[in-house]
Image (cartoon, rainbow, N blue to C red):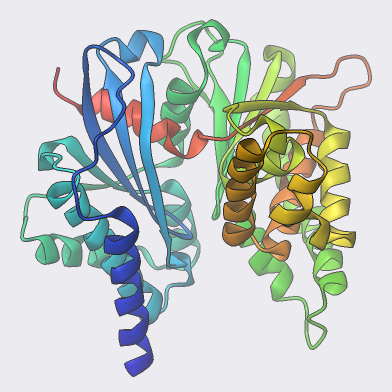
Length: 380
């Protein structure tokens, strides 16, 4: 119990300390805009995004991410410790949005992601989601606070609207690889009402967890990587192939864009010199080569080793170093191998003999669906 209290105290000081105590002065991008907050309980933890939403957001994708913060709590482990840590993080981030960021409660949207829902359904833990929502409402003293559990179809549709630019809306297949599941899709009929859902019950963390269960006494990275490949070649393979085939996305889409944490991490490590670019074009072989480097020479991908080889000035090196450091903090070697393994298995389905699709990795995809959700639910 003392250990749990210590963890909760650390989380509290992380939330309040890292986010600051004075109201920030944001550099707004649009002349007519409002500031909102989206707080999501995801598979790994709780994320808060502060967004500037332009007046014409729905037509022009005028969203500007002002702040993006996350607290890792591993909620889908479904233990008393991770439940308490998640409740603490959710409450702390909400209070910060109200008290520090000075955002009105009506401008704060609280949701539970589809990845959590999928894993909870797998393990018969849906009551944990209700208990989290009820406990959160008690903590903040707001019995009417709505905590929506987003299903995969709505999350994927909103992600597409929030991430993909309007001029590529009907030619792009978007796939979001989360911690607990993968979802995405495209608009097949030239309108935003008809959405073709793509869904897998596999995500970065669920793939890693499945590999971990197979390790036995051999906990080496070699055995882990071998079992990641076994999981993806066995349990996951049939589901991936079937989901891609029934989506008909190969025939209907020119571009395949990947979002989610592993897409952000992969993009940052593949093209660190493009640190300010929100979208990075990649090939299958580039992703495969990076995965092999992570497996065989992981130390070479530290922030120090990466910036040494870059021909940029000192200020740019400092910026790149900070972003690579965050990637290595969020994803360890095993998580990178599992997530990239899943990414590669999906990409392989689009590596046709006669036609190859253009692949893109989206860095800020974690707030894409939230930005569209804010626009859909906010007052004009």
